[in-house]
Every structure is written in C-alpha cells, then in structure tokens.
Length: 242
Image (cartoon, rainbow, N blue to C red; front, side):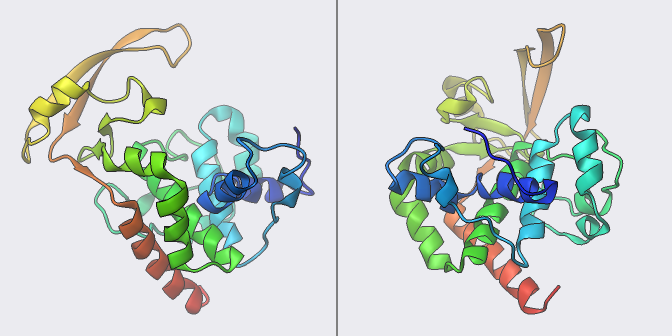
C-alpha cells in the first residue's frame, strides 16, 4: 500500500499522525491489524495550529541517519528552534530544539529512549487536540484499547541518562538488563551504576562488543500522568497563540 502526499510537508505531518495513538485506535476499531487500501484513505489529513509541531517531532524521530539530510534540509524552519519539551525532566533538554540547524547532524534526531517516548506522548496529545478530542477521551482510549502498551509502560524502567535499563517489551528484546540482573540492581541509589557488555550488530561491519553503563536512580513513567502534563502545556501554549 502506497500513499502519495500532495507535498513533502504533508508527508512529514502524516508520519507523525500515523504514529499517534488516536490513529492507531481508528485502525483497531476497524478490525484491521495494519494500514490497507480500504482504511488508510479514511484517516483525516490534518492542517491545524498543531500540525507543525507534530511534523517536527516526526522528523526528529525518523531522520536518524545522514541519508535523511535532504529531507531535513527541505523541512527545517526557524520555528523548530522555538519548540520546548512539554514535560520538565533532566533527561529532556530544551537545547535539543534550540541547537537545531538546517544542516543535519548526528545530534539532530532524538536518540535516547526517554526522548523518543516523550516525543510520541506529545504527538498523541497534539493529534488529539487537532482532532478536537478531549484529554479524557485520549486517556480512555489508552485505558481500554491498549492493554499491551499499558503492560509495557508499567514495567519499563529508565536510568538517569534516558536509557532503558529494563523492559518487558517483547519488541525490545535485548534492550537493557535481564530480569535476573535487574532484580539485583533495581534499588540502586544516586551515584551507583551497573555495566553490561553486549554484541552490537546495528552498524556495518558488525557485530562489535560494547559496554553500556546505566546510572541510578532508575524510574518508570506513567503515561496517563504524562498525558495530563503535556495536555496542560499545549493547552496553555495554543491558548496564547504561540
């Protein structure tokens, strides 16, 4: 199934919308497991005050290598530098936005698991707002229709630098520590670390041996609380017309 957007700008927006919980919900309610020619055309192509922020986060999630340089240069604009994280956390640095340039760099995309999760949370909220939904509707969709995601969220733990130190997410096999090792370190305090050696087969000419260090304390996120925090942030932002 292929989609031909009317513009590159629309492609950037669509990549964010299709990654959102509300659009995933639509496909689930249609009884489908994926996008097909009989349902993708029913998804709205949004153009609201929220869509620029959706597109930016989608670009920062997807433009992971130098081969996206042309796309990034085409889509970058100075408004990107005015964006901020909608959650106050030491693992979310607003300089990530301030330091963006038209030139794609290794630092351009979102690379830590914590940053990438937050960007998806913000896309969920922005998409819901653009659709005219309420916060309660978004939370209800999450509560009722996404039990597996809730299970993963409830047992995914992050270190001080935004790495996943442990997760039960079956789609992230090999990420973080084993359950046995995690149980022995989960109560580590500030200043304590744990290191593991892995075989990294994600780059050319691999695999290579790498050491990964996790920095305590470790914590997990609450998606519903994050939705509330992010919703309040963007509600205030767009009320002021920024």
